[in-house]
Image (cartoon, rainbow, N blue to C red; front, side, top):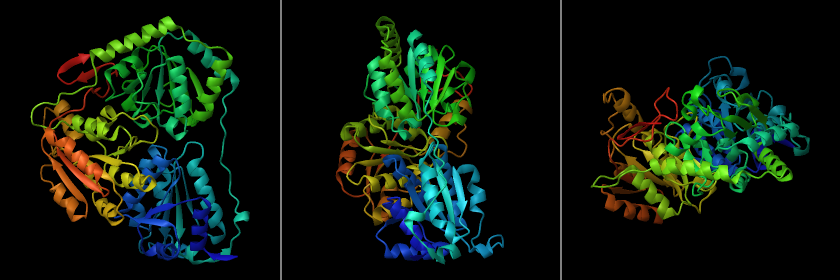
Length: 567
């Protein structure tokens, strides 16, 4: 049967079981939008192309499926770049469709023309320019395969207008694509080596990252840690891969990690790192990171191993399959932990936890941001799906909201993209309309994409925004306090809209709390309404995130607020 390019695109999306697409129309994609008008595919009209990519990203992180968005050529495509780079840094599977001028005009500086494949080559897993209608179906199929296979990531498909208007024969049975799938199965010798290292370890520790969640390996990780009583710490992207309520969980490590997690890293003699990148915010000074430990690194991406931290045993493999193999190997070889040494190790960690617990002081008439987050956790019983903006709000959420399940913490990790949280929450809520979805935001970050409140209002996407409003670019101000003698250079954000009135102007319900006694009531009210809600909490202006490891320091050296550096 002969079909137009626009029809083939919709057929392929159906083949890939795409149930929602986020987008923004424009001249180069009008034919596609005309076809969407005739289809049953759900489309969410965002207010900015960056919002479309973040919404697709949030959907992908929450579901584990490929997120999809559609934008026009030129500025529509370039507006999407930040979202694409965000997904690329965190290995999130997306397919981003961009419109393009007709092929005969490419290179002629036509209206709204830009080389988006060239621009995005450094921040996509792969990208395509479809020059021929006969290549369209196979390219789309290949794009979805690449996005979800191996280490996931965003794939861009650039669609010239004349290609989408052209016709060709379409038979789904004849759609072929290049299979890029590489199955990494560790050799038995690797398991034997790991076994020998673990057998002699007195102070073992597991470090979990986003690769555990992307690889759907949380159950295997949890089983391994609990069966052999191995404590677990995690990166920001690893939150939820191991239950935050479990006594073996030490919290996040790194620059704003817990004291006891960082001390455990610094004193362990065996570190099993699973699905991590060892980025600078996690490691601190490389030379002192896990200096006493034999390090095993499991990751599906061979280029991530030995990139930042030199390891003793590299294992390239899918995290789920590798952990299954490891559990089987340990069972078959009758591995039993040394109960006496394990008790001593866990006791040492307990002492660190008791010495410097993760805490704050809520007193007086000023709301502490940590109190808002803890109260939200209490009211939702930890069952909410949480997105965040970037900054102090993100770190306090990581510290004070217990994540017991994978895919429940959705945040921009590697790129640290302000404006991520609200559109991402919209994507998450579209995937899970019956669950509480909350964006924990700062007053600076929320203004980057606050226009997406209109999107939430238009479709009654009942996301909740918990706004920790301190009138500053909080994290930048914190660094100015600590390293620039409190010269708050252009970080004061007190000139800001009345967020409650602004929410109402967008058609969103707005509430405000100015005292600690009002926090719980406002949260209860906001959570109970089946509409999008913004809750403005006026919090302590100069509250800092602690612990904090100074740049260039060992993670065993932490500033603990009013206390001195402890190591």
